[in-house]
Length: 253
Ligand SMILES: [Zn+2]
Ligand SMILES: [Zn+2]
Image (cartoon, helix red, strand yellow):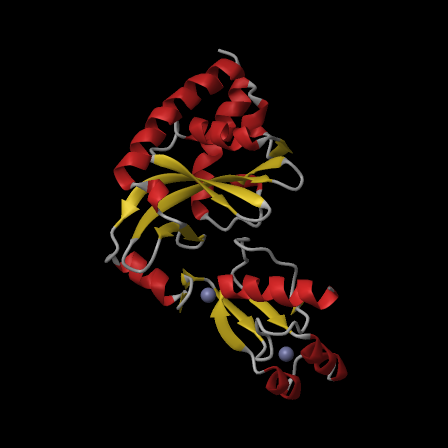
């Protein structure tokens, strides 16, 4: 069988699985997503009472900027341990000389993610595929099972996230006390960020205003004095990117 035939067969199979997946769990009824790479849990939700949790295997990402696919097993920023489960797909690709299965990254279109995910379903038991859309990336996840809301796993997840009044459970982020959505004050970051990006375990979203940056520079970095001026507070990831949009954009205009 050549790759095209194999791919088509797998994709036809996915269509059937997806139909059942969407129907059983009313996947399209949820407006929001949140995922945690460390626990490999995906939360779909409308609010705290209307939510559903799944365990996932990280397949890979399609970059909208560079129009390339990257397998999770190739991506050093992908922290999901489950990604190694898909190395069998890579092996299979090598044996059959299916390049897309063993090359870590290559130029791709929006369909590749679905096709490659469908092939992964031949190797790992899954109940569906979910695509998370961030600003720059389509992230493909192979959904393996439903997770009970009251399970210890979910309780643990809730403990390490911020329960935001506007956004529900989100990853934590840290900003100075001056940043708000009323007047733009600049937006200096510890590192370049985008919504939904993978974070290394030791990294947090951190931002401060232009005034704080002046003070920080005066003191040659963060110390007791500059930190006191900043008055860093904890917010949610979504609030962080609202602040980023507002404070960064409007300062220039
Ligand atoms: Zn500040
Ligand atoms: Zn929020």
